[in-house]
Amino acid sequence: MTKAHLIDRLAERVAERTPELSRKQVEQVVNTIFTAIRDSLKKGEKTEIRGFGSFRLRTRQTKEGRNPKTGATVCVPEKRMPFFKAGKEIKELLNQCSNKEGTSHESA
Amino acid sequence: MRKVDIALKVCQEVGVSKSEALDMVEDVLEIMKEGLQKGESIKIAGFGNFIVRNKRERKGRNPRTGEEIAITPRRVVTFRPSQLFKKYVNS
Image (cartoon, rainbow over all chains, first blue to last red; front, side):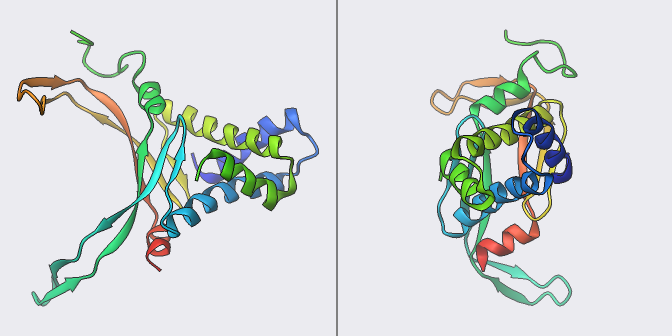
């Protein structure tokens, strides 16, 4: 599923409820959501979405790396990484009907 | 930031009512969840990819008792942020 698909599907749902909303606006909605999450992390603020998961920043410490071509040691500076943790609801959703293609000894 | 805060942003940016904005945020999350449940990956340009991965059974330990237990096979969601997103939080 790409962003375009996501917009299509949202447009379908919205059309039933609020037909006066244009596709352009629906597109703007989807963009705003992801931009909002991105901006919050940039500010160092986490975003927690009930039933979906949380986005937060993890800091990677400085480490000594090597230039693979020359072998020279270089210092890799500290950097921040966006990190997503799936919520309980998603975890359950993905694992109900006991792993369809997994081996069949559930529970026990 | 929470769901309502995102809805407020949508309300301001797109000029829809607060309740409509909240409905649409819920819709987007639901659509994404449905996709993930089907095992579909979600690719959002400029943001990142949500990927469903199948994990095989493996052994784990109860960290408190040290007892060995089997971790059942399961599906998990991983998020790989896009280059842009990574650059953005470090700029």
